[in-house]
Length: 171
Image: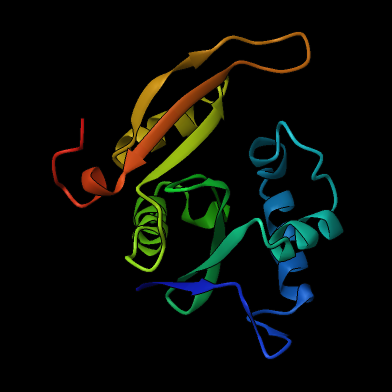
């Protein structure tokens, strides 16, 4: 069974303590995922990851698989009804439950209480496995931005609420 546990603060208490966030960072680092997920930003140590999760501009949620922590996803860069989404799952689930895990996060973010009509992705062009994964979970590949002197090429992708729910998209 896959469940989503939002990361929030109620009466000064967070859903999970900082030690759990550090555990997630350590697991992702052990799995070799850190450099892929954070390939174009300055998140390089556990404390920066904790700060990212606590930043009010981010909306993190944990993926619980069969009662155990299986990964994390978050949205940020919110602009009206759009947000950028990010996924990081533990290696033990790769190729097994990651599609279900990602779809559970998308179902969470596409709930009526959130304003999101569209989730947007930016994936390095070299990460073809991630691009294929996005296609498998129903995302549309919109195009590719070339590399710049300061950065790598990026594949731009998106998924709308309608497409996720199996309906025709607005035009």
